[in-house]
Structure formats: C-alpha cells, structure tokens
Amino acid sequence: MFWASYLLAALAIILAWPAPIALSRAAWPARAPFTAMVLWQSIALAGGLSMIGAMLVWGLEPLGDNLVSASAGFFSILFDDDSAQTLGVIHVFAISAATLLFGHLVFTLALTFVRIRRQRSRHRDMLNLLSSPAADQPATLVISHPAPVAYCLPGGARSVTVMSDGLMDLLSRAELDAVLTHENAHLHQRHHLLLWAFAAWRAALPWLPTSQLAQRSVSELIEMLADDEALRHVDEPTLVRAIAIVGSGALPSPADALDDPLGEEGRSGPVPGASDVSGGAADARSTAHRLRRLLTPLPPLNRIQQGLALSTAGMLLVVPPVLLVAPELLG
Amino acid sequence: MATLGDLERTVMDLLWATPEAMTANRLRDAIAEAPSGEVGRELAVTTVLTVLSRLEKKGLVERERDSRPHRYRSVTSREDHTAELMHEVLVTAPDREAVLARFIGSVTASEAETLRKLLGGS
Image 1 (cartoon, chains in turn blue, green):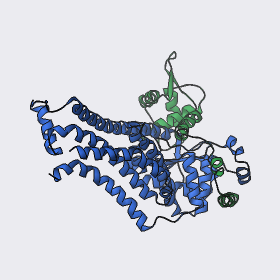
Image 2 (cartoon, rainbow over the protein chains, first blue to last red; image 1 turned 45 degrees about the vertical axis):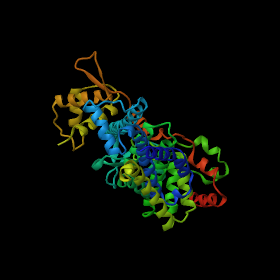
Image 3 (tube, rainbow over the protein chains, first blue to last red; image 1 turned 90 degrees about the horizontal axis):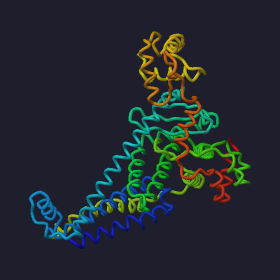
Image 4 (tube, rainbow over the protein chains, first blue to last red; image 1 turned 180 degrees about the vertical axis):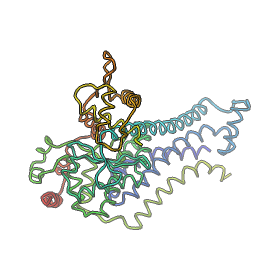
C-alpha cells in the first residue's frame, strides 16, 4: 500500500503548489470562466482528498494490504481490544493527523457557514430598517448612500439586490439594468455557495498557496460569469461604462483619467468589496481584468481546449479515490 | 397585519425623525397619527414596549434610566447606520486603490482609446 500513499502525497503536493500557481497565472480562464471554475473546484476537492488519503493509507499500511482490510483491522484495535503492537508510533501519528485534518476541514466549513449566515441575517435586519423597495424592480432595495454601490444578499426566497441612490444618480437606465442583471446572475447561479466553500478552504488552510489563489481566482471568475450573463441583456459599451463607474466610485472624466492616472487616486470613492455578506463583488485587480476582457474580447476556447480542461478536472476527481482502493483492486 | 419588522421600522423612523427622547405612550400616539397605512393605528402600549426592547437588544435604541416612564432615543442617526452598513460591503476588499487609475496604468493604446470613447459617450 506504500506506493499508493506516496502517489497520493505527490498529487497533494502538486495540487497545493505548482498547479494552482500555474492556473492563477494562466490567461485562458478569462476566455472560459465556467471551465476554469470547474477546474478550481476539482483542484480543491482532489487536493484535500489526497492530503487526507496519503496520511491515512500510509498510517494503516501495517494493518492490511488494502484499505478495507486495514480499516477493519484498525477498528478491531479501537473497539475489540486487539493488540496495537503492529502499529508504530509514527503510524498512529499519521492516522491521527489524517483524522484531525478531516475534522478541521469539516468543522471550518460549518463554522464559516454559521458565521456568514449570522452576518447576513444581521445585515438583512438593518436593511429592513434602512432601505426601501425599488419602484419598478422586484426583490430590489434602495438605500440612501452617496457612493455608487450595488450588491446582492443571498438568502433563498428572501434574496435581494441592494443598490444605493448614489448609483442610481450616476448610471443611466441601461447601465442600471446591466448592474442589476449582473447581480441577479450571482443569485441565480448560486455564486455565494462557491464563495462560501472557498472562503472556508482558505480559513482552514490559510498558509497554503492553493487556498489563497483559489479564493481570489474564484471571486474573479464569478464576476466574469455574471458579466457574461449581463451581456446577454445589454451591449458591451453599456456594461463597460457601468463597471468603470461603479469601480471608480465616481463618474470618471475621461480626460483626467487617461492623461493623469495618478491624479485619479485622490478623488476616487471606495471600491465595492468582496464582502462576506454580499454574494460577490470585486476588488480593484479583478475589476481591471474584467474591463480588459470586455474591451479586448478574446475568442472562447475551442472544443479541444475545453475538453482538455474538463477532462483534467474529471481525472483529478477520479484519481485520488482510485488510488485509495487500487491496492485492493490489484490484489 | 403588520409584522414586528414593520413595527420596528415605523418606530425607528419616528425616533430618527425626532431629536428628543420619547416615551412609549408618545410613540404610540405618533404611530396612530402617522399616515402610513400598513401599521395598525391602534396599538397597545405593551406592543410598543416589546418593539422598543427588541430594538434595545439590537443596540439601535437606548433608554433614559432616570426618567419614569422611561424615555427612548435612537443610539445614532440613520445616516450613521447606513454608513456603517455600507462600510461592511465596501471596505473588505484587500486593496482599495482606484480601479481606473490602476487599470489605466496598464492598458494598451487601443484599449485606452476604446475606453476614452466609451466614457466620453456617456
């Protein structure tokens, strides 16, 4: 069983360092955000599984030549008072580490869920007091604030999109439609679930490059997915103007902005943030990537490239479980 | 039938609109006079007190303890609460640099031209 645990460990290391770094630097995700999103999810899942699996398989090795008989041996030590002589300290350590890591991941996922839900419910409470329904849009609230802000607050049937009257003052009707379609796309495509999973992944293993890169890339990719949805309803120039205005916090004067880039710094408003409460918003870097993607559209990936990326994702999900049971299959 | 949420909203609107502290009795009268149709006109004072204690627990309302009957006031203004709420949404971004400035520092000439046209056309 040793070779399976070494292969799993190698996979865990690849998925923790080189793979996420390569994917986060690649240019193609902007051309196929959905495919890239699938790949990030499989990297995170397969990475976690192979980390835990490597330690488990290695630790259980003395108890049997496959995972099933080894687990049976382990449980008979735990519950039937069988002798633990066969297990060295180091094996017990590996098994404990695998169990702890698994518990830690599940616990952090639950904790993040509770924390986000509490924060959202408090936010919703305050919105109930401070905002009023938009005149002609269902499930849309208007709050009185000068900064141009739009975000969505997920919550099943109670999901709402919130916009400030500062935003309504700055945007034309069509630009406002672009922003609202973008926010509704976040809600319809359940982006908050992705953000939750990757926020938990990062909270659980903050020192791991993959968890930071994954969270940043995923929040950028959901913005691109929502932009693509908005483009089905409004034209490109309208969306670009809306993003530029919301992103800069003010109606940009093109002359100032382009001729004196540093001069812009002082008078710009805040940037909508990737808050836990909202179902997706963007930081400055990802807004720049979104603008570039809309200004210089690149063709989507062709079928072969798409297929290649998706089958890599599929392989990643199949390989760790196969490695876990492979010693048994091979006898 | 108005929900507790609606009542909380009505009470907060009244407290935010009034500079001095109000007793539950005065609040009840003010609600009865208010033109809003959704909240029932004749409320029991106990209902108003229930709403006030909920709002107090949420940290929105404070009670003057030295007066009898107790007088209630809002802790901060509506604008402060809004600013705080928007802060939650706005501030969590890791870098708050001006998006356009940052973007424009890195664009190609043709992208800059396109952007100039788009923004100029608004």
